[in-house]
Length: 623
Ligand code: ADP
Ligand code: MG
Image 1 (cartoon, rainbow, N blue to C red):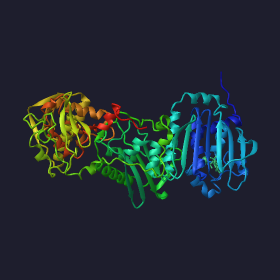
Image 2: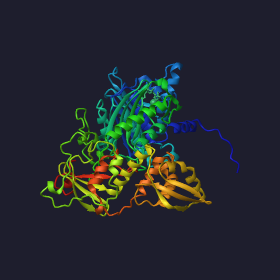
Image 3: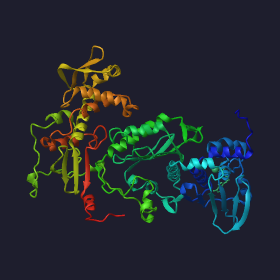
Image 4: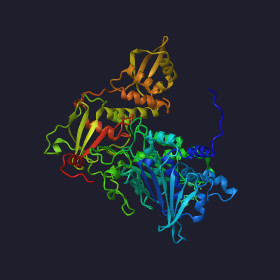
């Protein structure tokens, strides 16, 4: 049967248009809260039921509506934000289209309670789907506006059904409220979900306290702060230290002139600085508050999509990368194991599980950061002493003394590091070697700070070898060992092409290869002091890394190859009891990034006695 073309009814046209802006409950919340922000509010209270499907209520203490304005506000294309055509451009770029309220009325039953400070009595109106007022009454109320939307999408059953199958709504709403409350520290936000307080911030709190309120204790405690003032822009930044990372990018925030945006260039630039400091496929947390001359940005490229164009993007990325690198590097610290993770992954979770009052930071309750930073470890010189048997009477453990079986050359230290000996220590208080575990871990006790350290010797060796390789590489002088008769590796066509294309790079790090017949290569040499290397595995690891996500962004470079060389060198399960622990830790001390292997896994983790005592219920968990 041939379908005929029909003219849609006016009602349907409006519904379709509304759907473009108001796709789901979270977009209603966004529009309402943004309106409250525009109304100069100091406090905004958001309440939702059943993810917004039952009701959404946004209350503010802003300027309110005049009665006569209410008649117009819910009609299409009505706004107080564009008064003449000159404003239009600017208003549109800021997202003022005068459509939000009419669209919201189209898809829900709206009640407004409002009062301006000039009016002595407030007004309550009910609005129908066309944006007309269907009833108006006086009401006693505070200055400001409350908008309640009920029965969302009841008049559009198809959409309603579709909505119910979406569970990302919850995250979307959380994300919107998170971003708005992080970028408006001059407003107190309260978010209540199904009668539970989920988030609360206090206006004019210190920025870090605002972050604490929104993203939680664990995030706030592991952020490093920096700021920079350039000629054309300034940034206040909070970036995660090497102990804090996430499996997604949800905790990366960029605010430009108080608006949340996304920018892949900036994000990747920052992520790159965490390369080899945090594990692969993990992402740093950061909040960047950028202020920039509006002449230098173009917000028009994506009015709704939160993407803007910076005219000086290179300068911004370079500056940020440098700041992040410096800050991060100076504050590397040992991974601390938290066995009881009270601060859950869910950013809002603390409010579900705890009496909210314990967690609401107020402005005079400044967070005290534990001063464990690496930077500060240099200061303490007196305690730089390593415990040994003869220094401790109560000691029944053996201290490993240097033997011929150490896995790293004895003269290694001298070639490697020109730095002053004992310039800094990763274990400032010294340590006692209490034993080994699973042929893999080395257990160390710090009796001053009362902590247990667990060292992964394989990861530590990777780090040490890697930094030695880098040093030699940068001096253009990697000693090599020749493989007497060469080592033949058969490859597929693609693998062969890849290996040949990076031949020079391989060469620059001491791996010499030659083509041999159709799809085979001969490995002639490998870096000298990389122990127990399997040349074939090394080449295969390098090939694999090019296929994996890990190097899709950064091409295979000599550093990638060196990382692979180091991980191919020592197998887990090498006899840890034969290691010279003292020497190993000395060499780790001299590394630039001692706390992670080249792939970002920890070399050392710390468990405090306090943590253990909690585990054994010797002391009560707080909270
Ligand atoms: P826009 O925000 O693009 O102007 P909206 O449809 O969102 O369009 O809002 C229409 C008008 O209603 C606004 O321009 C503003 O004057 C008024 N308004 C909306 N929300 C509030 C509020 N919470 N307090 C005071 N006035 C408001
Ligand atoms: Mg609006």
